[in-house]
Image 1 (cartoon, each protein chain N blue to C red):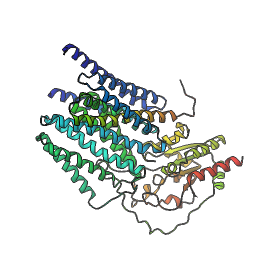
Image 2: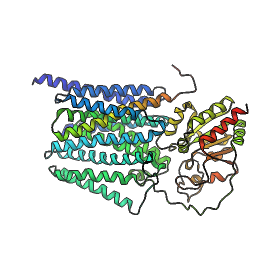
Image 3: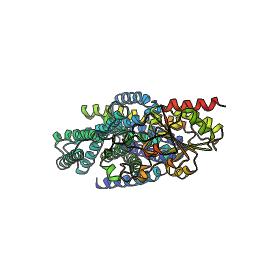
Image 4: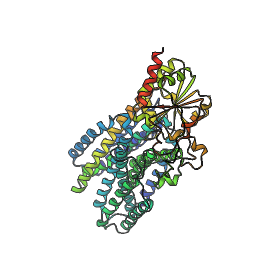
Length: 98
Length: 465
């Protein structure tokens, strides 16, 4: 138990540093799509809700889990959709280099 | 049960999660340039599909039907939310923060009731963090979305002792959390740990005005990420910890950028004490003379210019003027005028808002220039055309120590040879701060609706051809 906790903290620490480094390099031009993308990725919390509903451990947990899946899935679908729509709009005045 | 098969599928799930985590990181990495950003979405989508599919292999899942119904229902809600107008993106984003936080809070609550009274202290501590952050983000984001959608009054609502009340509420929820760590069987106090932060979320956003929304949305983004990471600790899911940490750090970085652009200290942001612009001495201003111009005169000046910088603000979005602005851009470019757009980090209602609106109007992104890059060019600029921006162009931020926005980085439009400001009337802006820019000799006020006025200039320029 103790070692899994430490492992988890290491993972969190490393992921936070990677997040800082990667996001620091995102152009301010794309801050809005960045936010909708991280929002969609964050909705990976849906996996926790899926297990909760799928296991049917209690009526209460199943109901809450069901709402949680709906909420998170709408973020996944809506988030990716709008991010894609936004990024499609960003065009350069110069011809695209392949 | 066959034990080796069980272990096998567990390993498979973990490997799938590992791949999904890598794809999520790549997804954000590819966001660094507009040319490759769409690859980032694909990486994210593949990662998401893999993770969800992998989860369905989970050995304990017995009821697929209910999961499937929920997934379909969620997608049904998600599609319209993904198809909103670009001007509605800030409220959509706030709403999605609320949904994310709702999911995390509900899962945390279920976990507590399933595990109580045997919740290990560390699990209880992170679970508390999960539901506290989750529930305050839920109501806070709903409030923000309501203000942005203008269902709720946009005016900041402040009262004496606001911070004391807010900090008090936060202290109570933390005290309950500590109690639960020591007494995880205390089922009856758990609802308090949800109810108080729900209230706190409302109170946190009440004092916030529209101009502060970029900071608030970023901060709520960060909270949503952190609560998801906390959920990862509770469920011992490394994938969730990584996704939450990425989202949390993204929101955090954006909050820092926004607070710097508003010249607010970081503690100010952390405690949510924004929106408290000191009431300025409105009303006592005597009417000073301003010079105004008609669309015809403005068109003549623009046509004679070599370099034009357009400064868009939230007013442009409100007037839906971005497509007319694009026509102006086209016609001036055709005449050989160099047109660029100066983007202040907090222009609009969320980080990057102006860029998205201008990109939607088909203005090439390499014409959109950040504040630090363009500020040095204003002295060589013939015309600075301010459309619906106010405080971000206020020279008082540089010179007037008594101004509430003193020290805030601004776009130095007052250094351009001619400044033209499209504005409905002389009434002070949202923050109620007078803008000395309007009284300069080189400034021309163009009174009217941004869309109509720009349309008038465009007509004049194309007609006189």
